[in-house]
Length: 101
Image (tube, rainbow, N blue to C red):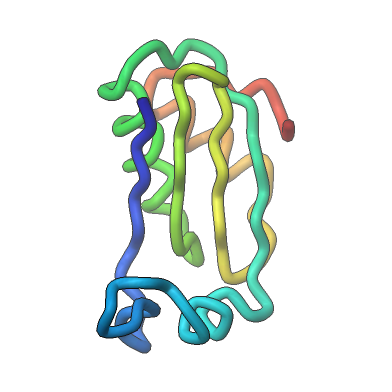
């Protein structure tokens, strides 16, 4: 099970009229940062949603994909996030940030 949360983009959707992410997606991620974290304690879709929701609240985050099966959370953001900000969000959701994967 996975949960992915996309925060709204000021520039509109990155997807084409066919529903595929094409050149707009590259533009939306240009200059952005993707980081994978390991989170301890996620066991189901509810856990994934809770972690995704809290991390999505960090300024600059553009998308979050949490996977309970692997304990990994992939975060895309406009700029690098501090580990402290991610740790605080994961703690608020009730889980433990192990570190970067």
